[in-house]
Image (tube, rainbow, N blue to C red; front, side, top):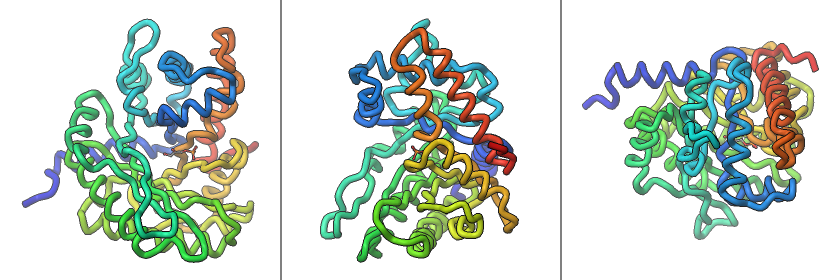
Length: 326
Ligand code: 13P
């Protein structure tokens, strides 16, 4: 039997290509309730439904110029169901800007029993039904985050196989429901390992894609792969370009400062190596840190927060085509 009809494949390809269009990337605004709580705590706001809603309204109602550099926004389930104070669903606010709504569909990391503090990601149960609902509700793509940890004995073969397999299963289920899967095997930067180790592990983790191809779900996933302690030498950056990943790679920011995340993306794109795919951003913290600070929970500062978001989006949009001038 055929896996996807040509029409289904075309639709997925169209969405994926729009996400990685030149000068555009993803705003990851899919913080879970708990993670969003930590962000709000930093600006002394309680973690209420309304504060989370208000903050997301700030992000999604920024001036339309944002869509020159933001092609997609990843939502959390709660946000997918929320609306502006005036009652317009957030999904519609984004669609009206020409931005593709995306959705985080995993249910978080859980311990991998028998491993040295490694983990896998849960959420396959009922995934197909949830994807169908998100698709019907206007989403075009999905995200599922897996985590791999570098230490003397990790990542283990067990962890790499498990996470590769669960990502491939997720990707296949998404595609059958018309959602482009972002395949995110995040190699954490934590630890005191060197650049070469980070390179080796990142390459080993490419196993994920081999599993995906076997599933098969090639040609429509984008990927976020964490870069480890990249110095400004573009040659070292090339180590982190994984192979076999059409039609694009979207890097997460992973705790880098906003400026470093932009400079490093720019360095990747100005490096004179062979780059068969668009290399762009799927940034959470590196697009939002200044926004939260400028807003501080005050209605009077909403515009100031939105201006910060636009500034970062423009900087990263330029970096995505190697034209960030600082
Ligand atoms: P950070 O950019 O904050 O690491 O998060 C990105 C993300 O969630 C990618 O999907």
